[in-house]
Image (cartoon, rainbow, N blue to C red; front, side, top):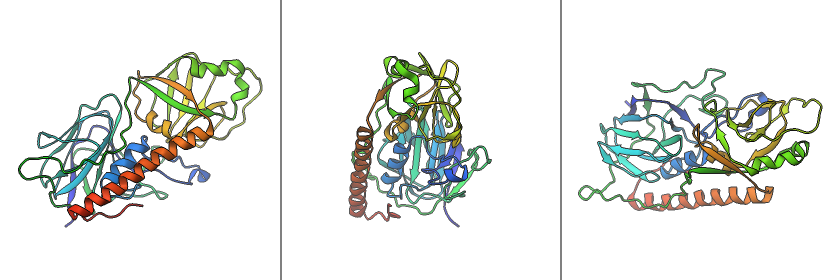
Length: 328
């Protein structure tokens, strides 16, 4: 029988990957990990393909127990990570022996934590992704007692006497500031806001409790459209900053519907989207304007840092004779 990972305390936990690529043409939201950077790094630290299934833990405490020896990586928001009560680091591979309890508690500063396992685990797929789709009822949240079938195990590798961690891989950690700065580029309807469009950058906005993976609602000095006429429904990107009639901005995220009819003032950059995946209700954010060239450069820099980490992981795993499934 294959080894399993048994969920002991679930909180809010889902099986995720990087989402459905190219399925918007069929009306399917992309879905996937809301903080794509932290999810990608967690898998890379385990030697997995970037798109391998992993766990997204939101806000509440979590605990699990493997039936075999495994290697895990926990990234995302700062939290207390322990194995059998012993504090273990985030953003580095961690050995967990069969029967030991791995806990993630006290999630703070951000909202989501990601847990990857060397070799990943079995998951159901819909249109090329295991990411949940709440509209279709696919991929329900995990509950206590659920078991995930592990694809492989890993002999214990931490030091048997001193407990000194064997890894110092310098993963690119997402910052978790008091006030978040979110980069955006101009949206297709920027000209329709005239001088009021600058309000997006002049003052901070507060994240509403009604925010979720579909979109974030932001309260503040909302820009106003100065032109008249209807806005036809059309395709909208992930990260669209929409300005409906009212007192809130709406920033679409990975669970967004693929069409909408509100004017789009700006579009959050790829790096900004990962940061938005960590903001909590009540957090303050400020928008920062970026050109397309600046946005592309920032994204490439972040991806190059992940690629460099992948090389370091492979070197470390080879030295320790850890059999990894390989990375894409």
